[in-house]
Image (tube, rainbow, N blue to C red; front, side, top):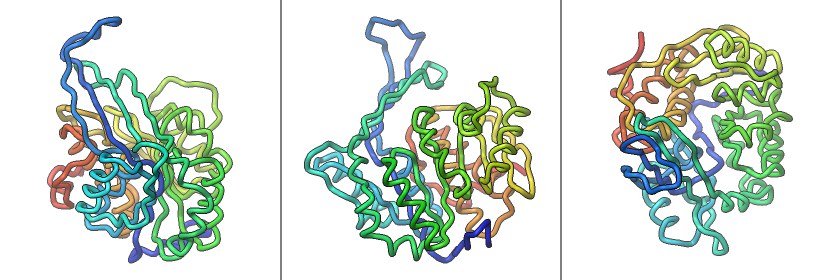
Length: 318
């Protein structure tokens, strides 16, 4: 499978680069009362965009190598062990003695909708350009490079330089609105992006618009015209809009009870990559992705521990 100047080597592992950390998510039991303690259900699990994508890929049976950094602390050791047991190659993970393992805190309302989130991912600054150059052979032998935008700008530059050198396609998750702009210089070199509506609006450098299927499809087409091969814009309960040079469309969400939205987008991304690596048409890969996101929405954690291709097909949108 060839896209732009890339060649997709489906038999090779996916190299995933970015954040890993501890997720703390609190879901309010009633309406928020500001300035006061609020009754909530609070849970802790392993997270980080890159780590979540890597674990989902591994649970689907895809070979995957994770390049990330954790602290030399108990959280970091537990995270690495859990991720390794899920089937991810963790041998290249950096252990840092001078900063703690990354942490994310999300606050949900009583309908499981995100109110706000906080993150502390300074440890990812250890994912330096020098570190990537040291492991450049991994790029040569990769099917895909997946990145989240917690990476420092100089590290991003080296990612794209190595990917170009070895003709490996890059998939990027914009991660958050304030990090999305880091991707602007590299849109023409990016195979696939998975922004939400606000992130897509920023990347397309369009005036702010209200989210809708129509506007999302226009943004997706705009980003394709700017050089991205595949654009997938997530619209929460409205599903996803997508575009490539060959096709475009909309896949509806599967109606389901939402326990926790954390990690749903990462599951979608992983399943889409898995589908493309197995030579599925884009729309079929996206249906697989929507199925993975739905399973994750029902689970009180960032990654469904018994995720499998069979489970995805059980509820696949036809």
